[in-house]
Length: 75
Image (tube, rainbow, N blue to C red):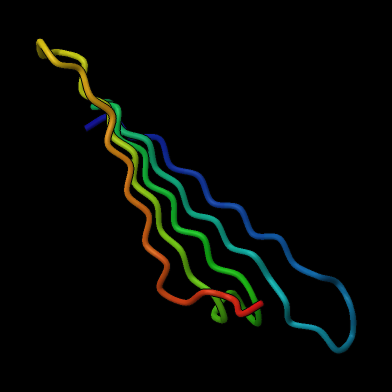
């Protein structure tokens, strides 16, 4: 399987802070992309995942997108 993976961590710098955003992504050769985003204290306060897949080798090409919020912020 030919896959591309990336990870990004953004952190707030300071003596009394532990806020971070963590982003994990993967893209495979079958036109499927996955992203997992976490943010907050040590990347554990909020959580969201997304999946996008495309299929072009059929008579009816399609794109499928799914999003899942495990923990969401309150307004």
